[in-house]
Length: 435
Image 1 (cartoon, rainbow, N blue to C red):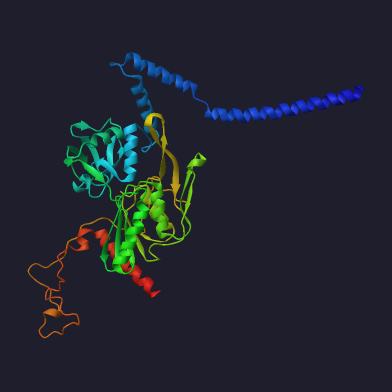
Image 2 (cartoon, rainbow, N blue to C red; image 1 turned 90 degrees about the vertical axis):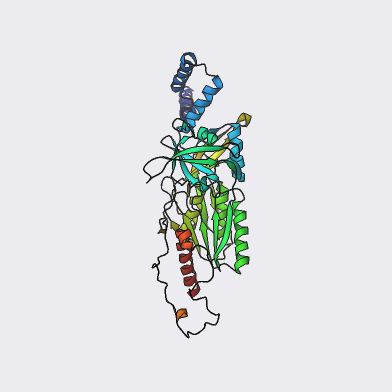
């Protein structure tokens, strides 16, 4: 009995010890998780101390709500240039913007070194008509220095009633001194997609920003071009100075030209921020050549489209390096109509490239230049049509000056990059036909 009792007691102690060890390991695991999620008490004491000192000692009395809002804005602005706190009015304006209509000057902007930096002007708006360019720095709004303002404060000051004016002081690379531009505010209605025929069989399609219906509008415009031309032999997709927009819009546009495979994927800390988007069967161009124009004003959703088409070798990317915004912002609604715009993920092209701070490198680099027609003063070129008794063509003469009767400024003079894209498109069409 004694021996059995001792053996039983030893077994019992072993079981108790085993349970204790397993509980201990479980407690340690929970402790590590709690430590990761726990509030930083020492830092919060410091915050409270600073808060109370401001309340008691600042030269003017400040409301608690205002102090706390400033603290929240500072917390978010210290993370990255794209995270921000949205008041009810700012949240409402953001929602209106994704639907394609908002008030102001027509600028997509960010912050750089305390100044407002123009990412891109939106087509056919007061900003684009005034000649504001991507990369410009705005240092004054009327008589108010931008330095010290938050981005939201600067944007709110640039907005106002239709017909009212604002003077921007601009610093531009390559220009010796700051200069002023006076703009008249207007209601900004963004036409997300527009198209035209460049030449018979070759179309042009421009996306100014990505909205919830951009992919649907793109398909409609392409089909309209196909009806006009009797079938497209090639398309130029212009994403220059497109600041981005809704992620689903970029996915839909990419899907319109791709028949299969990954379009883009995102990686974040939480499962809700991890997505993979793949293409569905069907190419709206039916395999016709595609050239995509980009520049430093092409950002975010534009880079998703360019990266997907480049990785799948579906289009030739032409122009200059893009902006390099490879992060995804999620709108997190709060109480009382407020919200957070928080960076929650990075996105990657199908081949795994991160665009963040790198951008898309074009397949063919082409700087924007201005060209003029080369002519010899006072001397007109002599052609066969000028010779006496020259044979008539079957279609008849075009005229002694060789003109076709059109006075429109040549495409190369209006937009050299587009002119070169069209030439490339013609070459791709020739190669495709020979194959």
